[in-house]
Each structure stands twice: as C-alpha cells, then as structure tokens.
Image (tube, rainbow, N blue to C red):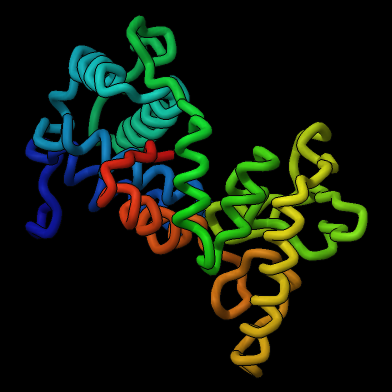
Length: 269
C-alpha cells in the first residue's frame, strides 16, 4: 500500500479485498479446488454485486443483513444462503487477522437460514417434460445419462462417477459406490445409505447397452488418445467428466434446442 501497489486499508473496497487479496493470496492454493471454486462463486456472483463498492472498513451488520434479505427475495435456497454466509464470514475473519478491520461485522448477524421468507423450492419434471427431454436427447452422445438419471434419481455426481463394473446388464442392476466431485476426483460416499444397489428399468438397460456399444466405437476411433478409466460417462477422451462442462456443453444446449423453438419450457436444474 505504501508503494501504491495496493490500496490503503482506508480506501480498500470489499470488491478489491475479496477478489485481489483474499481469493488470490489467502485462499488460492490453501484449499481444495472444489472449496476454492465455491468461495469464488459466492464472491463473484453474490457478494461483490451487492457489497463490492462499499469500503471494507465501513461494512456494517445492516449491509450484511440486506445482502441476505435480497438473496432470499431472489429465491435462493437456505443451503445457498448458508454457503454465502460461510464465505463472507471467513473472508472477514481473515481481514481482522490481517489488521485490515478491527472486528468482523458478521458477528451478531443471524445465519441466513433463520430469515423468514419464501425460499425457492425445487420442482421435478412432470411427465410431459420428461417425454420432451428424452425425445430431444434421442441419439445424443449422453442420452443414457438422462435416461439413467430419470429412472433412478441418482445425483449428477453419482451418475458421472459410475463405472462399468458398477453395472450388471444381465441382472439389470446398478450399484452406487462412488461420486464424482466438482474438482474431478472420485470419492466414496460418506453415508452408508448413499452406497446402494438399484434395479434398472427396461428402458435404462436398453439405453446403457446402446451407450456401451457407442462408447466402444468411440474408443476404437480415438486409439492411443483414449484413456480407459472404465467410466460409463467419461468425456471424449475417456477421462472423468467435468461436471460444469457437462452442464454447459451438453445439458444446457440440449434444453435450448428443440423445446424452446416449439414453445416448450424445461426448468433449469
């Protein structure tokens, strides 16, 4: 700050502190990729747009309460609000530790899940929307993902973490033994109830059989460029699928293709 490279604490804004100092210097490289991505999402999508222009030393409890109220009014779930609260609380605690502010203004602020308001409720697809989705996915490289997810209720990470050794096409069963985390690592479920074996429907079995044949052809075309990890739903090189890339490059374009041209709306997940 004395050399003019960083703003002095007196003029330091919330935006400058969170993005240029806290995320870049205090967080990056000290936590897992998934945790860092979560902090960055909360900072860039929620906190900075609301509080970024405020001077860090002038940030008050009322500012933080207004942030939570606005986010609740936007329809964010209690879980998302709790993540925002955790991120902001940790960032400001680190600011206190670095002598940038004398106290943490989140102290004394009630956790956002205690606020009253109408939270956004998840909504499942109705039968008509399911038929539309499956029709649009027909012939898609990831068609079996949607069929298996709809027929079993598996979470995204559980679907993308499946290996062919988890599926018995003859017995018609699927076993959940791991989940693909957002940082690209395969993790064993913490809860015993998450490790389960499910009976597959006829449609799911047919989709998986066709998917396996298509994947074998893809593996042959790639040759040495294919990394065989025995994954049911890898990327085009056989590696674990990046969940964010799957959403942006596969699922979202599918939602925006035929249904919207015909005036059919499928809700975003």
